[in-house]
Picture 1 (cartoon, helix red, strand yellow):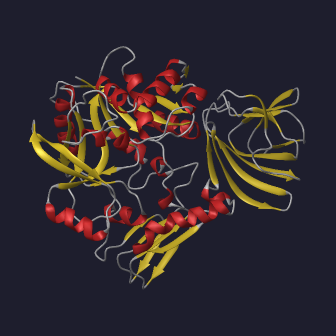
Picture 2 (picture 1 turned 90 degrees about the vertical axis):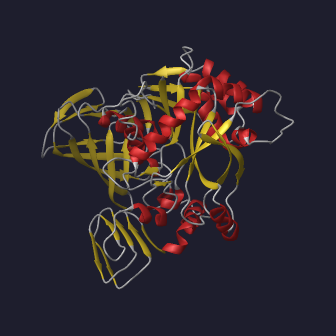
Picture 3 (picture 1 turned 45 degrees about the horizontal axis):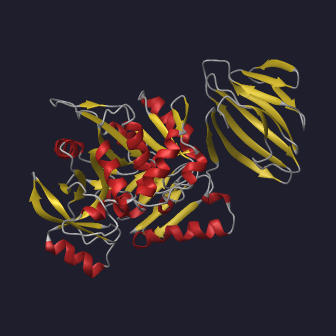
Length: 485
């Protein structure tokens, strides 16, 4: 049996601001270990084949153009090859899964898809793998499997699945229900037949394609057209932009899963559907949907405090403090969330963490960059950090990885001074090409074509001082770019 991991890596994670930003969302962050949530999702499947008649394929990661280089770099660091399937625009999870199913089934291999969001935590990997093996056996028989998290509280931020009659060792899906109010959530918890909706699924590629055709043929048609006109660029697969733009937006649950509920009749569904079942899962799952949810899964001291980074807690209780660059000192507080980054600080009561999204909405309305990007910005060649800025100047710390090459470019409104502090830079300036080594500098006049490369085997680190009338990143005219930007 071939298991094809499909990792859905979209979404912005606005409730985990200021660590999570639009251009660098939570699934790309290392929140509970050295692995990012995406890397942890991939690594979670290690050992799945042990003692089983299973083969684990390299993952298909479905994401967008914005995250592609960070995803590729994180997979490279892990030593894990992956197909990175790029959506030209967000259309929710049903089209994303449909594209992945078309990719998995292109050679009629008809693997069993294991569909997982990239931004979830699973503390008990062994329990998760046991459930996945059970789900794989059912999916191979043509069922569509989802996993319901055994609830331990009347949670109002999750959707619920009601389990029905037993079916092949699992339970038929009786119905899906939306996020409830507190009284309804308590009723679900007391009833014992309701589980949190994990958003994790298993089915054959052909089973999903048949089901989406029966329920939403318009989605399948648009995805199939976009897939047939795809372009492959190394590990990146780009579907046709114009064809995919015509695809309706819908979730896996709304498009298909709700139609599988036992006894449900939908006059718009013209063909018979596979059986949908739910498998209970108790594996320390969290969707890390808020800072309070992260606090719940992190290790804590005797007073219930969790800390990351340079943190000092004195007489505190049930508090989470996360420092990215500076010391955080908390004295005599309880039930607080304190998160520090280089350009923003969040302080909120644990009961109000769901409202962090409102702050992000305000920042967006004001056009502020803190909702979109970090001060430290990752690029396919490395990264830069905006160290300082003022009237008509900006200072950046730039690190270029070995063999990294920036685009051949030009700026209309700024000149640049480059000072190398570590490594060696190869600089193209106009018609000249030359090396700049440690403690040397060079100057790029306004309007001059230029390129920066790291020809060495160690990272190149330099300080860039920009000066001019306009210093934003959109003042770049690219002539050549090895990364296809």
